[in-house]
Image 1: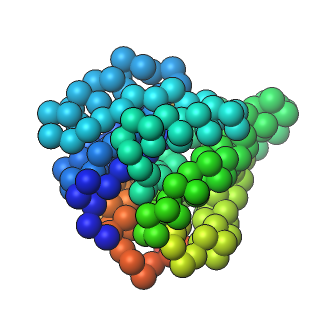
Image 2: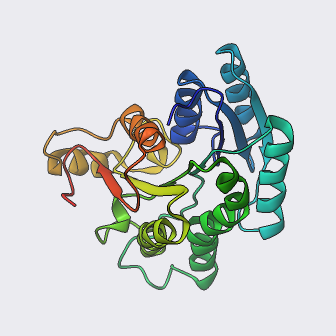
Length: 248
């Protein structure tokens, strides 16, 4: 699929991976809707950067735990940019409760992680599907993560990201042949808000365990997202990008 003049909606694009994806989509000719929840100024700056590339950008508020907000964000994007071809489900939330600390993993933390990381992408996809089908060449790319494949980090994050991988498979079957649905599972990415909360000792362990002895390059993850957007014959797949830490 040629991305020139396609319209993409990227959730959680006010910084980190989402911002990089939004900019690279624009580099490939797409117009981009950038969602934000609590970082409006940062999201507005990403929109300015996209506009500087000669592409249209649209800033839209989104709380993906709220079905009405999901529908409103999709409809506002279509009204502003004329269509919708690509949905990137990037927005996520995590409280880094250590894996063994079940007492600290409260029901409230569990519910927020599930509602944001699993239910949210489902709600966004459900809202976007009528518009994606209208183009007969729609794309959905979900951002999962290595914790969705191996038991690491917070249990709530790991289980929600594992669920997102299986949601990707189910949606690929449900939405074919007009829409492809794929996922990327990044490892620890420098330059993200989550990375800023990781202790240096943990970063050192991740690097040592990786075959390439480094963390994950955010731009590499974003480029794989673009590859899934281009691809016509790949669906239901999850690509791990973590410098050789997990072989899937």
